[in-house]
Length: 295
Image (cartoon, rainbow, N blue to C red):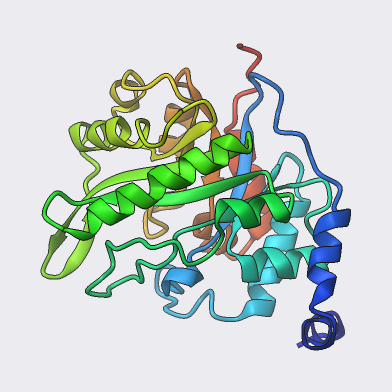
C-alpha cells in the first residue's frame, strides 16, 4: 500500500469525522443539461460479493487497486461521476476524487450473489436520508423481479418507498428493474425484449411519483421496443464483462441512438478491460456517446 493509502487508513482510524467534512465541502457538479449524455462509472459490485471479472475471480478484491482504477476513470474527459456504496464513495471523498463529479449512492446491496436469499434485495447501504445528508446527487436501487420468489414483494415495496422519499427531496432515483428467474439455484436475468419491457413497466410505476425516476436498463438488440415502453430517461448498464469488448461496444452504440437513452453506467467492463488499459476503455466508451442537443 502506498503512502497515500496509508494516510487514508490512518484518517479512517483517527478522524472519522473527516468523511462528513469532505462531503460538506465537496464541489458538486450540476446534473447534465437537458439533452446532454451522462457517463457514470459503477463501483458497487463488491458489496454483493461480486469480485470476479472474466477469468480473474478476485479482480476487485484489492481496494487500493480498485481505487486507482476508479480515480483514473474519473479523471478522463467526459466522465460525469461514480455510483458506489458508502465505503467506496467515502474513500473517494477523502482522496478528493469526487470534486466536481456526480456521486450516486447505491442503496440495496443485501442480495448477496449466489445466496439463497439473493432476491431479497434489502437496503443495506445508503437510504434517502443519508444521501441527502452527504449531499449526493442520486440514489440507485436494484429491483430484480422473479414471479416465483416471495422475496420480490419485499424488494418492490422497499424500492417504492425509496423512490418516494428521494422524490420528496427532489433527488434522482435510478431504478434498475430486471426480470429474473432461477435455474439450478442461480439467478439469471431474462434479456428477451418481452421480459425487459415487463421489468420497465413495473419499475417505472414504483413510488408515489415518477417525477425524479430514471431507469437503468440492459442494452439489448431490440432496444427500440424497450424504449417504446417508457417516457422516463434511461441509462444503459454495462452488461456482462465476459463478452468480447467489440461486441459490447457495438451494442451500446446502437442502443445509445434511441430517443430517451441518456447515457451509460458502466463498471467492471471499463475498470477491468482485457488489456488492463482503463483509460483507453473509458475513452472508447465515451466516444460512443452521441452529442445530443434534443430536448
